[in-house]
Image 1 (cartoon, rainbow, N blue to C red):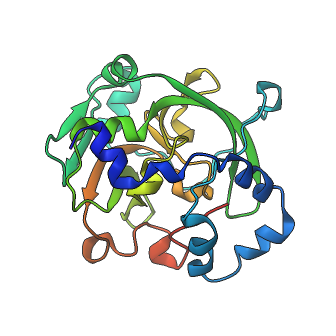
Image 2 (cartoon, rainbow, N blue to C red):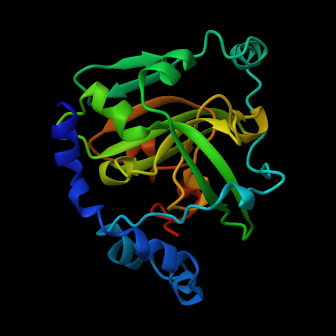
Image 3 (cartoon, rainbow, N blue to C red):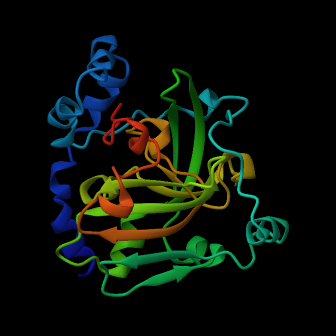
Length: 247
């Protein structure tokens, strides 16, 4: 499936004209109370419209982009890549695609349009921080692999682990993956993403809570459904957090 077909698959025509909705919602205390309601209601309110997150002026960028989550990966490969400016690292796109791909960082930077956004990261713990993220649109990368018609979800397999050896992972549905602000980011505040913030590639989805923006992404897998080895679609979702997690 080529780009036009992919976009038709995810129904991106519903994205246009919704920008104002999210801007209002993210500043609306009543809306935030909705997040306390069952996930089905989140989906009903936001899932059909794919709103845009508010974008800020660079003057609003926070002095420090707070680190949270697990410790950075400590595998020999990761440590070696980080010391060699990520030479040897590759991002893989696999699963229900006609053309599986893998990319090194230079190829990602050269082969796709460069997109930047200054957006707010809202952590489920209650704090927020604003940063400038630069990278490639997730939908552009997926389109090049030609997802098959039965593709429904995109799973992000990451290199960080909890203290018990469980690897972090996250997922989006195909419509969320096609969102015009869903980035595979390689820069934060005009510099390569620091190790503590998810280097070398971090998913950034500013329309959803921070735990959806998976760090240390190494493999993107396109699947027909969640469950089984993919649990509830994410590390924290398997602990009871919402899968949708919209802001």
